[in-house]
Length: 85
Image 1 (cartoon, rainbow, N blue to C red):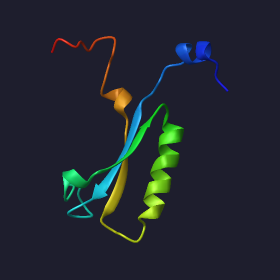
Image 2: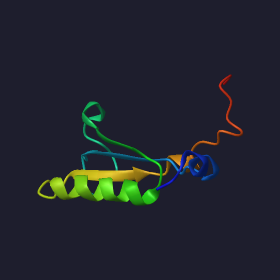
Image 3: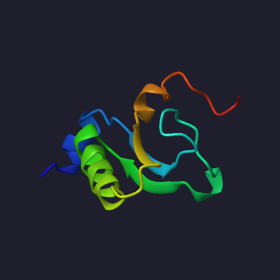
């Protein structure tokens, strides 16, 4: 288990897991953005993968339902992003 001191030294790699019903199984275009399923935000890929897998397995009977892992750590850079944008 990580201690608070260890957590401060580890780099957090934020991942977000979302899902929803697609209009077409061959494209990533959600049928209704108001009904997206936000599974959660996770500090690493392994925990995001476990959440993704669990959600995907629960909807396996719906061919249009898809879940995705968003690598949010690649989209934000706290050292260079500023609140004054």
